[in-house]
Length: 132
Image (cartoon, rainbow, N blue to C red; front, side, top):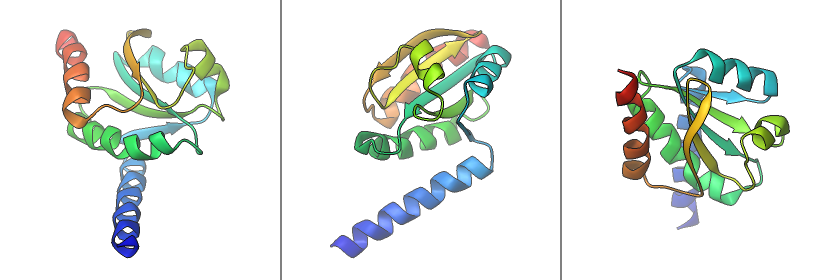
């Protein structure tokens, strides 16, 4: 049983690394880069995570799968709240994972915790369709 689970998580995190390398989701570790992104993209979907957050580990594959499906509709970023605490503070992040949708540099929607793929798509689509 544990071997199968390990294989699953290994494949999942290899997929996350692939999507990062392809630029589907950008891993952000500085406040300056965070500001640059939200100021220069009409729609940004950000997930704030920390390396020790077990809920983040569960949610990241969902976030990355949705990012791959909607990659042309928004800029997708994962913000390391430990490495970029100013970004987390400015965004009102008090727990991880926190997902926030920014439109024209302003936070317009968000939630704390885990949402399934369908729920995340539903939230994001309402903002990307407004921008079309």
